[in-house]
Amino acid sequence: MDLPRIDAGLLDQWCSHHLGSRITAERFRSGRLSAVIGAVLADGREVVIKVREPAARLEGCFAVQSLLHASGYPAPEPILAPTPLGRWTASVEALVEGGDELPSSGRDPRPFASALEALVRTARPLAAGVDLEPKPSWNRWDHDEPGVWTTAEDVERPFHSVVGPDWLERTGRAARERIACRQAPKVIGHGDWFRENFRWRGEELHVAYDWDSAIVETEAVIVGIVATYVAPSVEESAAFLAAYQEVAGRRFERDELEVSWAAVLWLRGWKAKRQVVTGEPIRSLSEDEAIRLSALAGL
Image 1 (tube, rainbow, N blue to C red):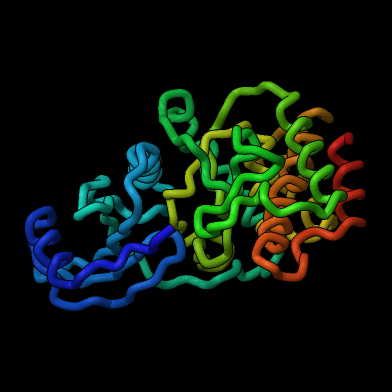
Image 2 (image 1 turned 135 degrees about the vertical axis):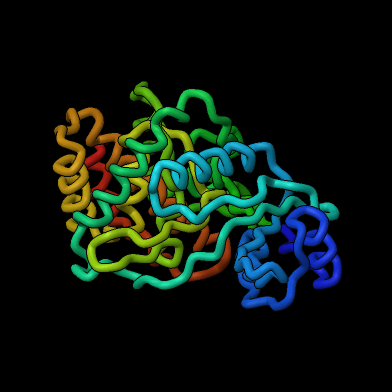
């Protein structure tokens, strides 16, 4: 996958045409799966332009972000829906800065659980009608690729072409089967609850970025995905799952809780498989942790 390389002159012309104002300064360029450009426009607006491969799901992602912002959830204000930019697609949102990497309580699970519950509740009206497929590779447990694991967008070598380790392949296969066993209504969540995508002020979420990672899934799977990011150890994940249920005001049924643990197992396993494919040491999941998580998932 090629990261978009956008000529400054072309981008200036594009902004003049679609935003009615040219760029006077670039604040930053960053990004991993897309080019993210912070810019100051001649009319004084400060914006973020996100450029990536065209994909049908981006329209749905923009709709989710628009609903969340309009409803008061701290998503940046959407300015321009996905629009062609040469061979790429670009969208624009308001630049939101400030905030801290962690809440003032550090790694305490409750602020994260509260932010997730508010997202699920606020976006629920869109869940039945928005198209967010295909999910990002690390969320796509229900894929139809060969083998157990989906190939990452930024890794050329197919994951199924790399053999083993056997315990990791068994783990991923079992996690997929466990998740598939439970049918439940779908909700909207954020599939990449990576620390850099969120900023906090005190205990409150200040801003959530990267709405290209919006997904439609069961609540149990979404909670498990978020637990993997904000609560990496088994004990921390258990605390996060308990905090989410408390904030949501309901207890998960045993089957639902097991699916959350299966989602934790899947995502940690996917990260571990990526490390195998790219020749890195396995850090995201040990065989002992896989055994513990399998038991919690009812496997």
